[in-house]
Every structure is written in C-alpha cells, then in structure tokens.
Image 1 (spheres, rainbow, N blue to C red):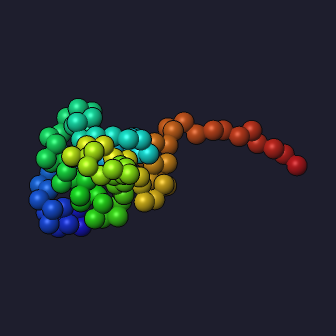
Image 2 (cartoon, rainbow, N blue to C red):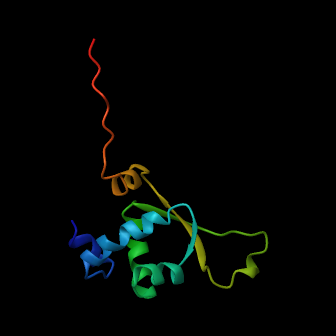
Length: 107
C-alpha cells in the first residue's frame, strides 16, 4: 500500500513523504503556501504539489482554498488551509513522550 498508491501519483520516495507528513500536520488549520512548506521541509514545490494531491486523494487531508467575492483578484491560488480528515492523527503524531503519573489511591 505504501508503494502502489504513491506510484500512481508519481511519488518515488515514500520515506520523504512520510517525513513530510508531520510537517504538514504541524501547520494544520493555518494558512500556508507552497513557498512556506518548501522552506520548512526542504522539498521542491512541484514535488510538494504531488504529495498534497496524493494525501488529499488518500483522504488524509483536505485543502481549503481562499475564496473572495471578486474571483479576478486571485490569479494563482498561493495560499490555502490544510485540515486533517481525522483529528486523531495530530494527537498520535504529537503526543508527549512523558506520561502523567497518577498517585495510587487506596480504598
């Protein structure tokens, strides 16, 4: 599954995609651009487009593009928001290493 589906979208390096996903999840809910994602992850913009297309097709993320009353203002869609389709993914990726210790209660 990690090899077949990404190859349909032209993705050869699945490890790089796996390393990029936590970076994308970190920016979840905020307005981002391909430039910002490229600078933070060190991945080329064209490859990022493929990654985002694949992750959206795999129903892991949802891209929400900006809208405006006057559509002529947006020559290119540079900024968008990224949302996870399952919010538990963020909790699983960024859970704390330390676990809380509860004092034992004797009844």
